[in-house]
Image (cartoon, rainbow, N blue to C red):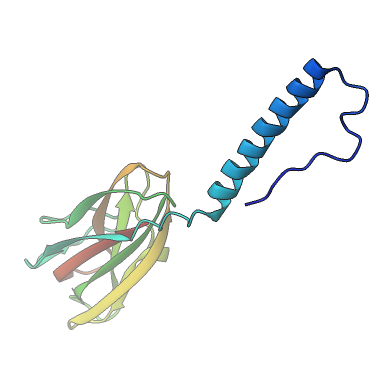
Length: 170
C-alpha cells in the first residue's frame, strides 16, 4: 500500500485550523489511494463461457424453390447473445439433388436478416453428400436471436437429411 506524504514546507504559514483541514484532506487522499490500490490489485472477473445450442431434424425434406425457404422440422434455435454480441453458426446435413448439373443449398437466417449463398453449404451432384459450414454472426449483446435453417435449389429437386443447426454464443 502506498503512503501519501506532504511535500516539505506545505503547511508553512497555515493557521492551526488550516493545518487541521489540510491534515483531514491528506487523510481522505490516503484513503482514496488505498481504495484505488485495492481495486487495481483485484483479479479481473472471469469471462463468461461460450454457450452452445443445437437443433436437429432427421426427416428427409425436399424443395424445388429457387429462393431460400424454411422446410418442415427446421431446425431452428433461439439464443441470447453474450457480452460480445457474437455467435458462431454452423449448418450441416446430407444433401442431394435429382440432377448432376444443379446445386442444392442449405443456409440460415437470423432474426432480421436473410439467408445467403455466401454462408451456405452447397452440393452439385446427384447422390448424397454430407457437408458442414460455419459463419460468424455479429449482433447486439444481450439480444434474443432466432436462427433458422433455410434451403433452396438452383434447379432439380433438392433433398436434405439429418439437418443440424448449431449456434455458439459469447
